[in-house]
Image (cartoon, rainbow, N blue to C red; front, side, top):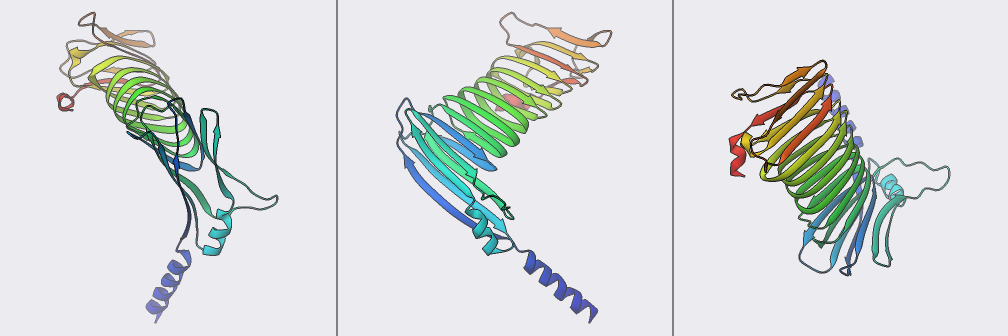
Length: 295
């Protein structure tokens, strides 16, 4: 009897806790010109941007509310609003919360953007408490992200990132990359082009290809790891204060130490791209992984 009672109570609790999902979907085809710049302003949003070879843009925007009560979810969803605004050459897509005075939200509300646009279109994204994904773009790209995740794949052109409490994961990049981050875990694999990275209280892992033209990392209390396919593809200047430098086990080089500063510097050929790392209170690690040559 007790077992049956407990089973019944568990089933009732599960039924009561089942989440209801209410969604409003907006689909638009947007006309662009070669001079159009696209702005996306997200709040609690997942923003996915994909480049394609068509002259127009295609937007699918899902506004989502989740709550155990469908009635509550439907009511709260009305507070999640969006705008599509054209001002000259600027196209702005944004979502926001509109609440009457004295009201509170009980549901989990999110906006989910999926936007296809010409790969070369200039793009600026500001997002908070969400995720930003860019794929197959070749133009001028800018991301300002607070809290959440940034994911990048198959990008060319120029990318500037300002990140606060937002981790960055990327693969197959060939561009001019500039990043200023705070408390971010940054992992970039299969990278070519030039990279300038600032990070504090985070971590950085870089996996460059032979197409790399240079790296400048300026960091504080940030662990930095560099994985190269072949050590003599690049020149290196590593410095860490109150930290250590770890080199491959078969390396004939060793780091130097002066007071609290540990450093490593080697140049194989004058034309080699330079990887320069400066950090503090954290190690710098150089590893060789020949398998990276197969990428």
